[in-house]
Structures are given as structure tokens and as C-alpha cells.
Amino acid sequence: MKNENVITFNRPDDWHLHVRNDDVLAAVIGDTSRDFGRAIIMPNLPTPITTRSMATAYRDEILNQLPDKSKFSPLMTCYLTDTTDPDDLREGLKSGAYTAAKLYPAGATTNSNNGVTNISYLDDVFDVLSELGCPLLVHGEVVDDNVDVFDRENVFIQKILIPLRARHKKLKIVFEHITTKQAVEYIENENPSCLAATITPHHLSINRNAMFQGGIRPHMYCLPIAKREEHRRTLLRAACSGDEHFFLGTDSAPHTKETKESSCGCAGIYNSPCAISTYLQIFEQADALGQFNDFASKNGPLFYNLPINTELVTYKKENKPLVFPNVVIDADSVEVFSPPFNLYWKKATS
Ligand SMILES: [Zn+2]
View (cartoon, rainbow, N blue to C red):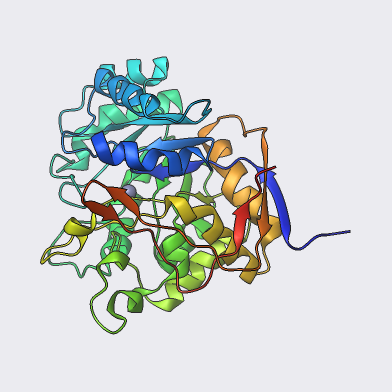
């Protein structure tokens, strides 16, 4: 008989994650390694990861901070700049030092000042990625101050993504943390074999009102910024459809309270501790738990051409709402994302 309070699925992966470095890394990595098999690690440190030797050193730093016996595997990415060396990228991808390359338009988000100023400088780099079948990960927003912050993803599709795909037909692209109806519909209409998208737990949970509920709410601020309710509903439909073009990527990004709650607060939401519980709650509310394994554990590895994790994990529904304490770092802390509904799905210990 079907038990509606228990779900078992392949161990999931996080296809978009920030863990920073030093004491922040040490404080947060356990929250990801507990629940995920692998994660695509974002390279936007204060000194970005732009060479394969930097990627290897960063990977070692992450591995050193993992709890004992953890089987978690960080997958590294190359931060593309106007001067990325295609040969270093090729060697890094071939050796496994990198799994993918990341394109930040210059100035798009945290630590992206060294990002790409003109995408046409990178044709050689895109050729290397196409040749090896490795994905280009894009932060899909234009950075033009004249474009409204809520429209930057849609303008990116028109101005950057469509021409890029026309020029590099074999390039695999992950359109990261999509937030709009236009992004979902573009992918659905094109039905491409070489374009997919990740969707975060927070963009499935909140619309833009959450940033202004009774006052300014810095812990609901991230980039791309949350959009109107109609967009959230479209993202929800896409995630819950099981469509292979959409998969899990938390975009979990730890920033301390001091840097979030300020006159110019950082963009980013930290959701690693509650990510799976949040996604499960959302899928349950949408009556779509049957598609959860596709979204969380299968569609990602299929797109990246990597094996699906064979280990199975089980989550059970508790009677009382779960509590996720903030992460303490010295005298400061990182606030954990709190969706506007209670969470009940908890990983079963046995
Ligand atoms: Zn991100």
C-alpha cells in the first residue's frame, strides 16, 4: 500500500551552489554534504576561480572541510573572463579539474566584477565546451542599468541567449536559476537537446511581495530577483512536470546577517539546510511527488552526462513543523531561508 508520508528517491545533487571559502565554507559545507551526492560549486570567490590549478586548490579546500566519511563530491567550475585561456580550460575539463564553465555578465551579481564584458570575446572558449560536450552555465541577466531589474532575465533571452545559441549550435547551456514565465516558455517551445534550466527552492516558494512584507526583508533578496506570482506559478508547473529540461539547483548563497542587513545588503539566500524539505513540500502541495525523483536526482545527471546516484534516500513527514537554526559564524550568523509555509519532510535516519 502507498504510504503518503514516506518518499524514497535517488540521492539528489545540487546543480548550483555557493559555499564561499575559509570560515564560511567550514560552517556551511556540512549542510550540503548531508543531503546531496554532488554539487556544482560556483567560482565567484572574491578572487574568482579562473584557472585549473585554482579549481583544484579550491576543491581540496572543500574536501578538507567535509565531515568524516562523507562521500560528497564537489564539481568545480571555471569562472570565465574576457581573457580565459581556451587551452587551460580544455585541459581542466579533460582532467576533471572542471566539470563546466560559468558565465557571469560583468557586474551581474556577487563578486562578478571580473565577468565577461562582451560575449563575442569567448567564441574559442565556447568551441572548446562544444567539442567536449561540457556545459556553459549562464547567469541569465543583462546588466544594463537602463533595463528594469525585473526585466533583465527576459531581455537576456532576447539579446544574448538566442544569438549565442544561433552561433554555437552544439553548445550545451544551463540557464541557471530561472525566475520567469518567459524563460520556462522559451525552453518548452524550443524543446532543445542542449539547453536546460535549474530552479531554486526560493523562486518556487515566494513572489516579489515577500521582499516587502510589512517592511523591507533583506533575507528574501537574491539575484535574479523574485518576480510576480504568475512567474512563480509557471516555474512550479515546470519543476513539477518531470520535464527533463528542468532540474534542481538551490543557488544557496551564505551571507552573514551583518552583510545582508545593511544599507546596501548583499544578494543571496541561504537554503541548503532546508532545500530538500522545501522542494518536497512544494511538490506535495502540487500533488507531484511522483515527479520529484526526475527533478531532484535524474534530469541533472542526464544533462551533464554523469551517472545517476545509485544510493537511495528516504524522507518522512513529521507531525510537527521542522526548525532550521541559523548558522553561527563567530559573532555573526547566516539566516536560513524560511518559506511562507511550514516544512515537515525530514530525512529518515535509518
Ligand atoms: Zn548563484
